[in-house]
Amino acid sequence: MNLTKGEMKMNETPLAFMDSGVGGLTILKPAFAQLPAENTLFFGDEAHLPYGEKQPQQVIDYSLQIGRFFVQKQAKMMIIACNTASALALPTLQAELPIPVLGVVEGGSRAAIQATNNHKIGIIATRATVNSHAYQCAIHQLSSQAEVVELACPTFIPLVEQGDYHSERVQQMVIDGLAPLRGSGIDTLVLGCTHFPIIRDLIQSVMGPTVTLVDPGAETIAEAHQVLERRQLLAQSQHPFHDFYTSSDPERFQQVGSQWLNRKVDVQLVTPSQLLSYGN
Image (cartoon, rainbow, N blue to C red):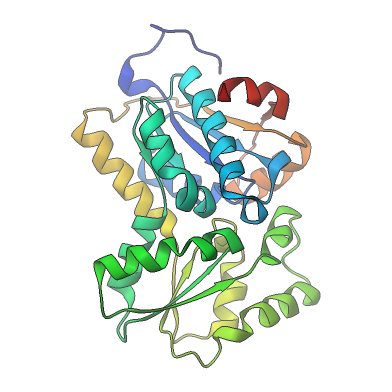
């Protein structure tokens, strides 16, 4: 939905979510449940997927372009529904954009501390998120006694993007990918990439019932609710709109998004060259 200034009251302007692909829909889903009156925008930057294999400055640049796109669309808040971008770009976005910006790392870290009993917490994420040690730092700030084990699982992301997470081949890939965590003693595992909750059942079956899985998304939405309430920006829309954008292959995005959200998803293409204009 293209809006011009003055068409909506500030509290009715949309919440904006960004991710490198479809994985961030795992945060949009609880947003629909917890904030049902909110209008939303979602941008999946599929042309630059995966962020976890990019250089930090590239991730910052892509995220800032998307943030400025959201500002042009009159968004009232930006939620980085991407752990890699949260780990690398959050301070820049908070400094550069005129709207509140939330990431997923802090919420996920708080939830992990609340969930663990033996203070041994695992993190599975992209290489970039693991290399940033963002979760490790956030968890240690909350609890100095916590022991954090980090593991990069980049092979999981294409499985989700392709919508292929039911075959025996995929199950074996998840078993192999999580092998370093077996026997590590962790009782809590943070799904430190928004793609991973889509294969949550597979991950749980590999790790077993004694390991609690933490999805940072729900915690982040709870934080967004608090910020909006404090700023008196909670929407009262009777018929909220939900607009979806991607920088590549809108048909495939529509197929995977509709399957995951259990609703029809209409996706608009914004090419990288179009997106680039918002970063300057």
